[in-house]
Length: 209
Image (cartoon, rainbow, N blue to C red; front, side):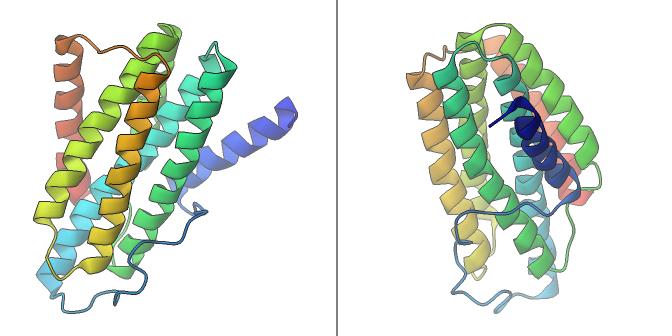
């Protein structure tokens, strides 16, 4: 792939992350379940809020992976980030599809989430591959925790959303482990705390907007 081709692909990914229209390579988990079977209006609204948070997380993931690939020193690391990023595109598409089924929308603040995450990812990448990978691993660890909490919060009857979130959780664990195996280091605790605080702001806002 030529540099121009690569730029077009990455630009298309960024655009679809922000405005919608991501294409998944894998089928949507839970497709055999009824879209909104047994869900009342309040349950649909709550499920939509949680799935919007998850969608925002995937918007941020695309920005992080794209920015870190730009400055990665090692070709194997770039390939690993590219593979994980493609699975995150699946997550993006799954969440977007589910939000439409629930009669809701993606976050109106997606351009801001993307831009902020891209800047953070670029900074992590410029710090060096081991720190960049450590940032990926810590991010995925925190995302895994959010997804586990969502499995407890989603209505029991919402089998489709739960199937999507569970598969996302499995993938995030693999992405975090891949980053560590590639040489990622454990981030200092103060940085972990800052990341948690930023995540709290994002999840609280994205649930509503």
